[in-house]
Image (cartoon, rainbow, N blue to C red; front, side, top):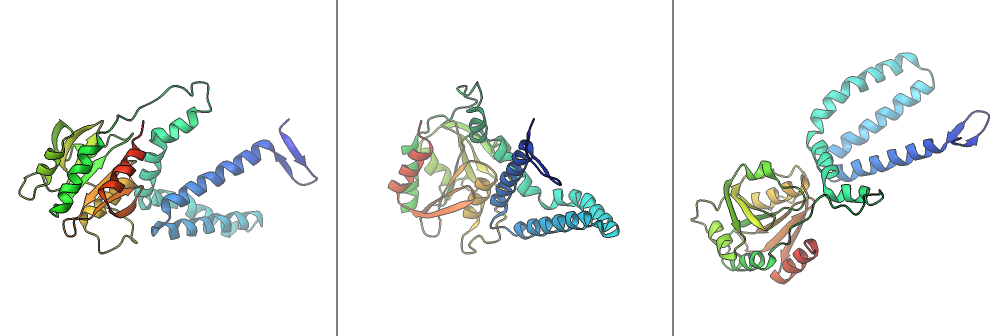
Length: 264
């Protein structure tokens, strides 16, 4: 009943077309995750190897087909190790509420909200960044969305305080014991300070940016969080989203960006 095209040598079903479309979407998403990293070359090489294997199998070249098939089946174990950061990013992407909400919107329970972003107190954050920018005080502020980043919160000193511009400035004051690392803000509260963040694995990351910028890009690669950076060298304000760095913002531009990101 699902046949849509039948000839003497080929039988195409509706399910075959759906299968092809789903595979194309999957490959496109994998390409987006790997784009800009050295892993993209490995991924292309794997695709080429699989195509060659399917070709020699279709031509009934049994010996070569068995060799390539054995290599590919064993090689998948090694690939899990090689692509561990990319697999983690892919699973985090699938787990975000944005993806889930897109799926549930087509179902009968589409009006049910799985999670809700707390309204963020933006002004104290922007004011603190502006003041720290004037004094070249280095800062790294992580604003969560759907992912709580509990594993990163656990690396720092718990604070559990309402957002305060003065508190943020005091945390990052150069003589403060908490100024190293990042603060993490979740559900409109400063959850922890001096948190340790993952560093970006992007080999094309600009070499003239320091550890704060690399950590900001790293955490935004592995989650849906927004990372705000104040440079200790220049006082410039920047932010990272989705692994991409946006530099040299004015306080007005930062506020507009945060309002767009955390609007109700």
